[in-house]
Amino acid sequence: MPVKSPLLVDGILLLYHHPLLLNAPTIMEHVEAFERHSRYKVWKLNTELGFPRGLARIRFPVVVLHYSLWGTTGYHLDEGFLSWLDGGGGGRKIAFFQDEHHYCGQRFAFIDRHGIDCIYSLIEPRYVPMVYGKYTSASRVAYNIPGYVSDDLLDKAARFRLPPAERPIDIGYRGRELSYYMGRGAREKTEIAHEFRRRAAGTGLSLDIDTREGGRLYGDSWHRFLGSCKGFLGVEAGVSIFDLEDAVRTEYERLIRAEPGMTFEEMEERLLSRWEDNIYYRTISPRHFEAAAFETCQVLYEGRYSGILTPLRHYIPLKKDFSNFDEALGMFRDETFRREITQCARRELIDSGKYSYRNFIRSFDEELTGMRPAAGLDAGDISGVDALLAADYARRMFKVKAKALLYKQFPGRRYLVRWVKAILRRP
Image 1: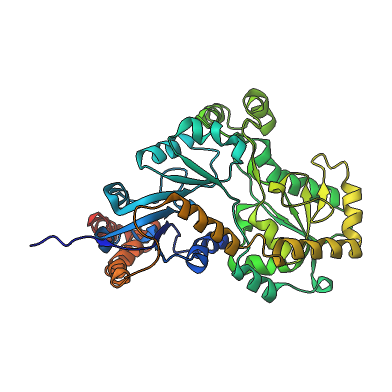
Image 2: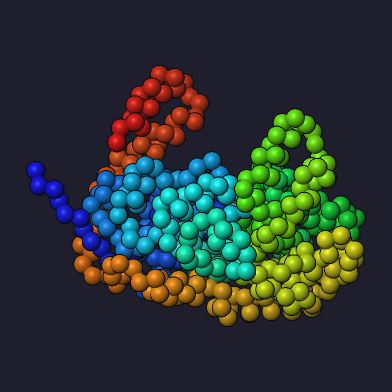
């Protein structure tokens, strides 16, 4: 039989990973922004469903690898996707990274092994030569922040934002404990919660502060919570130890196996202190834009916040030793000052459009044009592409649901396991 020639498509393929369960809304806001705002045609594929057979026949001039693909124990790209990428399925390859501070070795190897042309990083430009310049052959690194202001966020704020006088919670917060090897910067995410709650006891403030894994909120539950808070605690996103050669994590794991009860302070003295702030990796978080959109007053640890947030203009600053706790509390209780802070943050961070996804994608398109992809980007004849990508959708979805059975307990499960595993081995 004659071999069908590849279909050369003008446009961008965006590969991302999203479990068929609830997840942080910021991931899909980031993914959908490309399709919604780029001047180029964008097709997006969720690698959770596996490699679509029809993709083998398609060639794209640009492939974007979304940050949701990169896990700590491997990547959400099966052999089908990797073979397609390496076999010329994608022309220019652009990778977005977040949480770049650990498992660096496998990330650096991926960049070189699969020929990544451009990296979008949270690392400030002055530190890029110490990271990607030293450890990879990547020629282009563009700076960005973890998330921007989406149209969906504005809609959610309009729906769930209560008037200040009707908000039942004075101060809210959600965070979770991270591994010691990420340093004091990661420790701050729970430290601010515990210390603020301790000092605020007896002040009459209504608090909803939770750092337990089970306390995390998703979807509309998160937005209802944010819209019910007059104020919100926060710290910079990121960590204070950048583990370039995976040495800190490896030694941390050895120490914690030997002494499971070791405290953070003991670990800091024996290992962490000599690595603190070796590469600056702090940034503004999507949560700060969310709070601004909901006109929720932010009480934040002092920091740089990517040069975007200004203390006493966009937030109430809290020193990390809590030495100004009473002063910060006094500013928060001043309703006039609190209203000025929240309205300024809303006006300058949200309503200005400066930090919108529309603006970010415009700059992405400009970067892409400067890269001069091998084939055209402007959408031409795209007939048949959607059909090829969706041709075996039912088969791929069935395999995902079958795989989920391996992680559930139900009567007769053991009789189905062998059958399910056989299905999963089929191409």
